[in-house]
Length: 220
Image 1 (cartoon, rainbow, N blue to C red):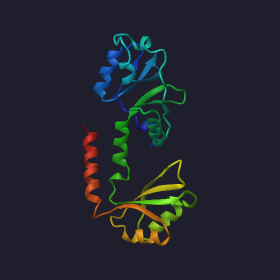
Image 2: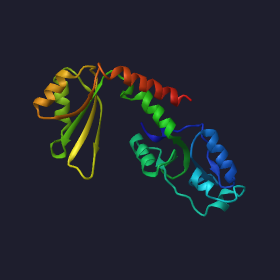
Image 3: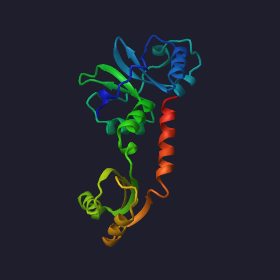
Image 4: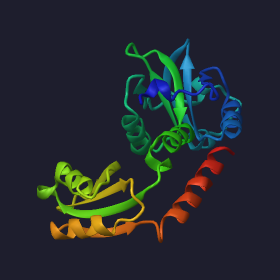
């Protein structure tokens, strides 16, 4: 999935001629804390609620209130992971999307990204979660997948977390089985450290409740 597939029509951009008051009103209306600003149709930057509130005269236009604005954005061909990284890197609630000529084509929001991930990802699939602790030098997704598949199961999704001050990786697996006992025993035979497991007995009802709560929140 790429950025152009995430663009929403529900959040319009501001223009340089809009006032600080208008910007704050739109942010409140669309439940975001950032909005893109255009000048003559060109993207000039992303404005934040906190930046506006720091100004004294909110009746002034944005080009009077601000000499320059930060310009975080992604290209419309950017993968969803790059979009998520941009959100994390800049702590923004809205991500402007530009084409290869840097022409503004729209924006997406954290709300839209989470909605898309929740509705299309492995979150919806039945299964259980297994968390492994692995030395960086020993990490092999191929071997991990082979162990899972040797137990007539498959990995629905995986992600890795690392710390700059550690040589360990935390590998989280979503597996299409609700009981992991045989898979855990196999990993242990290969000397893998099991950090945590969430399976049928202690997981499914809770994760379903969490998933339902997330969807209800996103529909608000």
